[in-house]
Amino acid sequence: MKLLVHLSRIFVGVLFIISGFIKLNDPLGFSYKLQEYFGADVLNIEFLVPYALLLSVFVVVFEVVLGVFLLIGYQPKFTVYSLLAMIVFFTFLTFYSAYFDKVKDCGCFGDALKLTPWESFTKDVVLLVLILILFYGLKHIKPIFSTLPTSIIALLSFLISLWFGYHVLMHLPAIDFRAYAIGKNIQEQMVVPDDAPKPILEYTWTFNVNGEEKQFVTNGSYPTVDGDYVGVETETIDEGYIPPIQDFSIESSEEDLTSYFLEKDKLVIVAMYNISSSEDDGVAKLKLFTDDAIEAGYTVIGLTSSSESEKQKVKQDYSLNFNFYLCDEKVIKTIVRANPGIIVLKNGTVVNKAHWNDIEDIEL
Image (cartoon, rainbow, N blue to C red):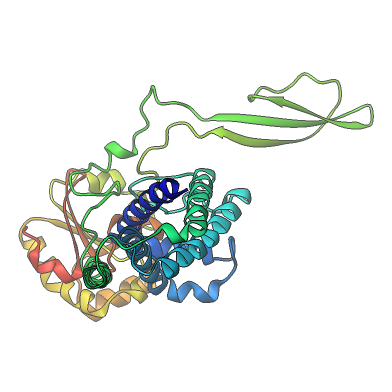
């Protein structure tokens, strides 16, 4: 039992630190995932949506700290009980999401590792078993240092985690795992190769045969049945190849301008997924920066999901010298974790990006 507790302690502690750090690297992204869970289509607790960012920071800091606490043996009872409460909640959440097919990606490891809902649930079940081992073997969890060093390490883990979370919120994630990271080409990641695996679909056909409804399963072909057609249901068995970027577009009210702008040799995109909720201090910085960019030969455009009236208002209020185009809000949030944020592209390749706090650091 003692050996099993020690092995579980190491595995759970390391996994919580890794998982927590990945999400702590991008707490804004995790808050978007929480908003998805809180929405009417999943848990229907929308009153928590405004607090998603605060909750995301609390959860990921707590996750990292609990991992450290477990490894160093700080406050074992508090640590194990907290781990158990957390894993029970997330096991329920991932099961609910998987069973009712509500959320396609749990966000457990941010954008670094995508897990399907059932994979995430399986991971949580394994963790639940390991944490139950820790729960029943609590007496075997001892501090690895004396009281003072253990307390100092515990305090430092909390302070460093809190500082790191604040830092990436005020700038950008230290490590960008998304498809719009610096060095990535947007057009290339939108292409589906000719030899890519195709989706596998299963069709369940219902026919009325001699007054009785019967079902016939095929891979797509219409079944030869001596009866009256009632209906068909389609199930995706394998989604096949999914390109890293699927929904990116730059559209005016009249046409799709995605290819036109992505072929520009020098392009600056000002990303504002929602103009009304953008940071006033950040918008105020855009005038000087975009004027300099245009003078340096850059094409400057804005991307937003906001209405035409909001676009015109922000242009007038801040004397902005570029036009806004439409893009899906979720896509813009994925491109850059700032509102507003800046992306610099060369022929569709991301060469730089910045939070509005760091606009002055962009070299044109």
